Image: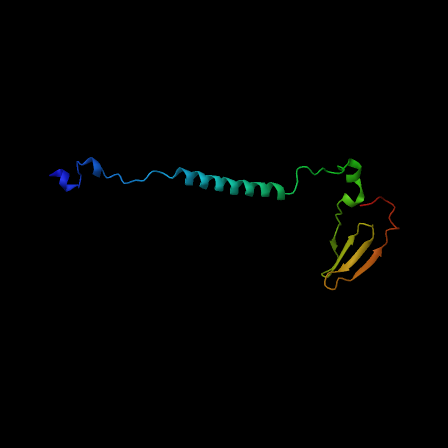
Length: 119
């Protein structure tokens, strides 16, 4: 009674296994095509990537290069003299008064007046 309830038969010809054998040639061909495409992608990435690691730095900076004026920072001492005007010293050494609304500048003291070094 149990055998008929679950459709289990005792006949060896009707074992219920209807799976076909695997197509190994198709699987092998598919893996070959996938690996070929993958290797072409990797090859194109290697060929088209610029050679960043082999570039050499031409000349490293020396201490004398860093001491040059173009590498020095300029910190002007800006002072407000009125609501609209500021006075500051430029890199060249001029003392300038600037109107912040109109951007007009007036040189108060030229750099030839100062004898000290550069800023």
